[in-house]
Length: 301
Image 1: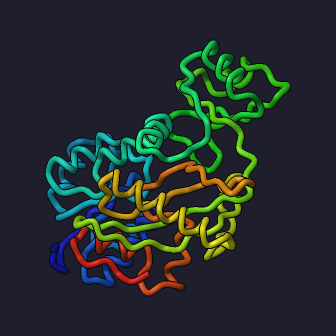
Image 2: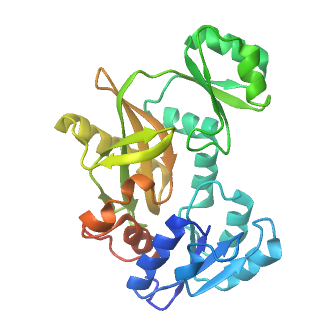
């Protein structure tokens, strides 16, 4: 167990880092933020901050030397920076988990390999591959970048009457993934925490409603059959176990009109759909993250 008074390093200075730092302080820990901008939201409530680009190896080394354990607040932090910290201090979740969830194709292949259902997908390396994939999956379909997409960014809807060349042009000709279109009933997510000893604390599945691809409303718990909710929790537990997660994981899923569950994305950090846990639960997702990475027992949900 990492004793109170120790320093938790948080890579990223946004709102999720801020709320993690606040939870850390409540448990007696110091937070040290690595952010690319001055006066970041997380740094405002933390004991210390390092301000530098993530590619600044010397700054990353200074940050690592100043903390006892580290985590990250979003998954688009360069993995190289996380690995530099991990060479000197424990980092949770592991850098390998970050690298898997940063890459849509790698993430989908991981899920398929462990027996988790996802949307149908194809790797897209060039225009010919896109044309072939549209023929196999049909249209509409969604063409996404392999990396750096979020909140609807980095994706193009391929309509039945559209030309593959136009979608390929709009994506900039970069490596991508084509996903079959899902006519879903709703979108849900399961947020959970997992400790180093394998213990888990799972929050009830919630329904998420988006406006212009950005989360607008979360309904907790989701109004779905008990069997569906139980299956969603089982899937999330299975993924966390196979990842070897230490920390917090959000598993986003589609619920099809037939009642099937298809995993859409993974986020190995606190999630916007888990903010309700601050007010509604004994232990918030942010406190669970601190507990997990410091070796404390997980709290009640």
